[in-house]
Length: 145
Image (cartoon, rainbow, N blue to C red; front, side, top):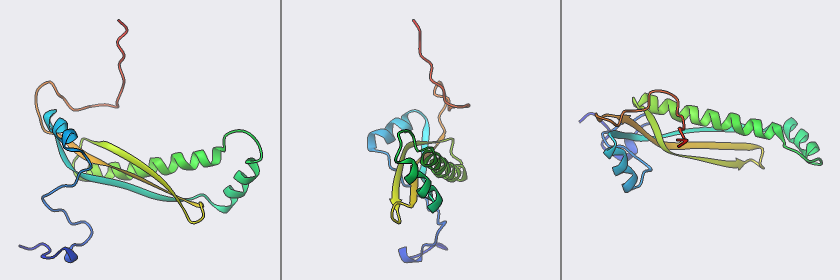
């Protein structure tokens, strides 16, 4: 056995045989029943500084009504970066998608930093038959009759 022999010997990047998931037992069964194999927990994270200049600008605009677009734009950018990093981890596992995604936003350092974490379970389609994996961007179809 060439791998670590004790938990304290484990280094970043260790890939064992077992996987971690945030799915409930019922969710896990439904995923497997539809022909998907859970591969592991994937995480994307980023910490964004909102900057002193933006804080001053937002403080000034806070005296007036309306959206604080600078903050909204930062939140969108931070969320997109966290999701992209999560998707990258899923790609590294050979996944077809990520399910059960949870996004968490925390503010740190006197609310000057925003931490965004995206976490989910990477899955790969391994089944056959009518349950084909998604092949393009998701879309919603609403019957009109």
